[in-house]
Structures are given as structure tokens and as C-alpha cells.
Image (tube, rainbow, N blue to C red; front, side):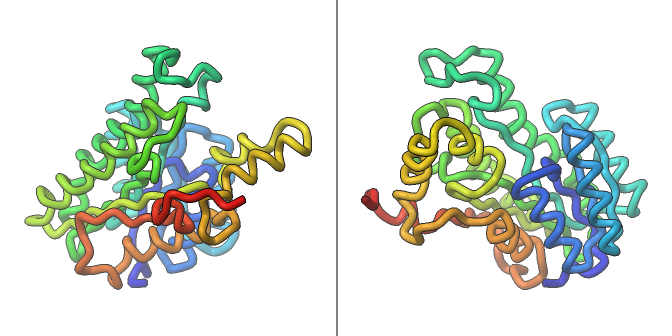
Length: 266
């Protein structure tokens, strides 16, 4: 994939798709900066990568904090001398903070928090990484985590959905503006994936309730199973590597066919 020896920074890498991407990048020979707001999970991921023979460090950062983001970029340069790939993966959903997630009930502070992490965080990490990426061989790469929630409407997503739609549009704008320095910018939109963000919906309740939730989650999938984080990470690795050298300004949908139709399997 052309990632041997390259420096990769992954935000929100303490679990889920971020962790899976860190593992895949390391398997391809990349030097990995694992970043997360959760020190325990982020440190554990970096330690496991090193145990497997990879070069990896953990740097704690809240991507909604300008000071944290600037320090994260500096720590990346200090650890590995530069940056080749930025994977803006950190993200949250309203339901991470409240059960009152309807648009007419959501607290303003939670709306701001979701937008601040998902959209502003993506912009800010890219802003401060861009000058460093410009120095990378080939100009560097940014891969942004969007969602099919940014393509179609879902209930209880009045902050999450717009934030992810914004990430897709921000990707296009950055692809235009960073092309002269040789930096490619793409995004990807997963559907329901077997990550902690989705698992919380079917990990509680009675067996019958869990079964009903799983049927709802999988009912729109043309391929009737839950994608694994590694399957999404494979696309991220492709977009980060040299094999996608002519791809920029695009959004890749990874949703088991959900947005291809308007159906629900029985």
C-alpha cells in the first residue's frame, strides 16, 4: 500500500475504527501516532502495537481544543520527524452524552460539543497538520471520518448528522485548497459498524429487545451482517497509501448497501 516508513497520526484511535486503522497502518509498516482523549485506551493501543514490533507512541489530545491540537502536531514531529498521513477519526454522537437526543430536546451545550469534536476538530487538526504534510514526500494525505448519517437523515442525530455532512463538504474544500501543495484529502462514510458507538444500542435490555435492535440495525444492509472495524480500516489504508495516488476530494461509502435502496428486510 506504500505506507512503509511513513508517519501516520490517527485521532480517536483508542477503540473502534481508529484502533483497527492503527493496527492496519502498523501492519503496512507505518510509524503510528495513536491519539485519543482517553489515556487508558490510547496508551493500551500504542503498547500493543509496540509489542507487535511497530513504532508507535500515544499522545493525548482533545481535538476540539486548539492548544491540544497544536501540541499533538508538535509531539508527532518530535516523535518521528514529520507527518505523512492524518486520519481524522475522532467523533462522538449525542447519545454519548444524553438520552434526550431529539432535535427539539437536545441541550445546546451537547450540540456544541458534538460539532466541536466531529467538525471543528477535523478542520482544526487539518489546519495545523497542513504545513507539515506539505513537507512530506508526495505531499501527504488527509483521510476524514464522515458517516452515512451525513448523507441521509436519522432520528436523534441533529448534531451528529450535520457534523458529518459538514466533514464531507470540508473534505471537498480542503482537497481544492491543498492540491497545490500536493496533499490529497478524502473522506469515508461508514454505516452501522461493530464499534462501541453502535454496540451500546444492542448491549443492553432483554434478549428479545437486543434481537429487535439488531434486526433494525441490519435490516437495511444488502449484505446482512455487521461490518467489522477492520473492514472499514482497509478502505482508510487504501486512501492513505500510494495506490490511491489520483484520488482526492471524494467520499467513499462503506455501508453494506444501506444507501443503495429504500428497503428494510424482514
